[in-house]
Length: 406
Image (cartoon, rainbow, N blue to C red; front, side):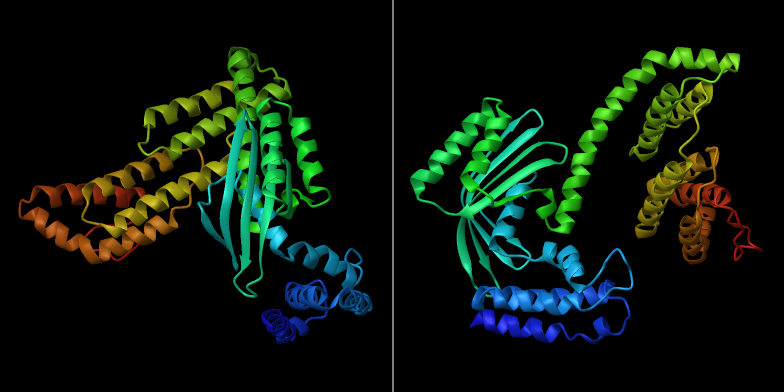
């Protein structure tokens, strides 16, 4: 009954008006209403059989896209809608893969599905990871529920495989879990994969099977690990060849591209991290800039400007949240001062707006308290005036209402 009601709800949603306003079948709105229809068809297939899907795809095929890459409605359905469709097994696959990177706990919620963990085992071997589990998956909408065995193996980078299937008897599951864990811990990754695929057959999934948000999150982690390896290689290349690069620079000779690439990557990464540090090391930043100059490496201006700007904006927002704090004011002043010394322009508009607002609402009172001999307001006024000068904001009595341009 609940499936029938959910089918009817999606059949109504597929008539959402904005999906029918546009003349391109692959547009965001039209694909969304096809997804609603796809969910109705998915439920219809579970209730009534394959005939529903076959007729639906026949009709979609008659609708043509204006873009040759997308062909017709059937191709659009297969490209954009089918991969987004969910069922209990796909949710279990998502859970298994995600469990390689985070611990959900005994009970978890993934979108409109509740997960209850019955068994859970993980193992790691250098950069490889393995998850084996038995879970109950329940739809909060239709109340449909299944107990499923699942396993996920991540060998490295994007090489990831998961298997999901209906729960077998306890002996079969325990035998599989012990066997696959033993092969993995013994370092035989090929055997581990073979055992996984042998137990689940064709019910296997890859990183492509993950929900898009989680897919992006895991890919970010994988990229981070890959970049750490690349960084270590580039660091060794640069440190070994840095004296040679300086020598070539002094002679006016063009260095090999691979050495410049390594130097550019490493020095810009170090500079960006220095700017991100909680306590800014001005001397360290100056030395890195000198080192960049000495080996003839260009600054990654786009990345460094964005990092510096975000650092300043974060400091400005903290100061705005508690404008009486002299320490927050000093921190912002120092950060802006460093930004001004960099050999490229940093966008300071947001910090200007925040400080100009504080000038209009707080400065006169602090100046009055400072004139009365109070030490802390005196320090505040001193640093605020210095910060305002760095931000091209006039603070004089006659022109306190004006803000200069950078």
